[in-house]
Amino acid sequence: MIKNIFFFIEFAFIRICFVVLNLFPLKISSGLISIIFKFFGQLSKNHKIAIKNCKHVFPNHSDKEVKKIVLKSWSNLGKTVFELAVLKKIFKFKLIETKGVENINSIIEKKIPAIYFGIHHSNWEICVPLLDRMGIMVGAIYRHINNHFLNKFVLERRIDSLETNKSFYTPKGKQSAKDILDAVKKNKSIFLLIDQKDSAGEEVILFNKYLKTQTGFLKIARKYNMPLVPLENKRLNNGKFLLIFHEPIFHSANISDSDMMKKIHQIVEKWILNNPNQWFWQHNRFN
Image (cartoon, rainbow, N blue to C red):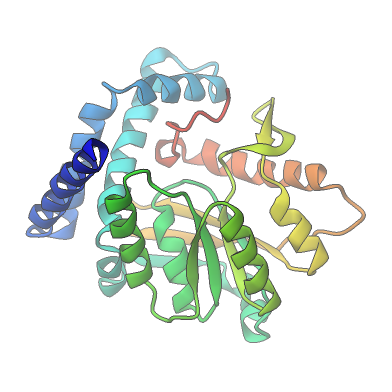
């Protein structure tokens, strides 16, 4: 009972904040929330995790350089959280640019189901609604938020951002495994964020350290002959986003899942090294 009261107060406060921020132009609201996250973020325990992670990836950086990267990461996270509530506006104002679509033209035209993968970079929430608008039926897994009021609100915003009812979101767990397999059998695609820890996964090297990593999607790719499409995501200085579709990768029985994931991690490493300010350093990835 007490927990529910706390959850509702937390939800009400956040909801009011969103209502107030929506009174301002998108760029101003996004800027305000980024400042708030940057200020309070560095007071949290996750800030220490972010600093530790960043030092692991950039061991030759000074403390000042590392702190600068992490603070910009907090700023990006704040913008992403706010933009989750206004996803439809991002598409309404045409704030997303794409590149490399020619790499997947054949996949789209022939309606070939594929596994699109990205990382917690820039605003990762725009990927699924973009794919949906491109005519790609896609299923995506999301992590359930403990606060059920917030969880319902966030899920509603995600679903509302879709243009069709052919794409879907499913909560991480047994249900998502069933939903994703059912979708694949119906020739739907999958979108995954692959940069976080999976305690049930395999040990795969990332930035010179072996870490528990999800590889289950590679078994699906191999079994159903689904191309793997790297989807790079960048937040631009003009308030827009750039999503880059790289050439598809094909998995086969000639290479193990861990070796394929190692190749994918090499792609991910380049994205992070080229644009560290927009990665989600706050996740305890290197423990």
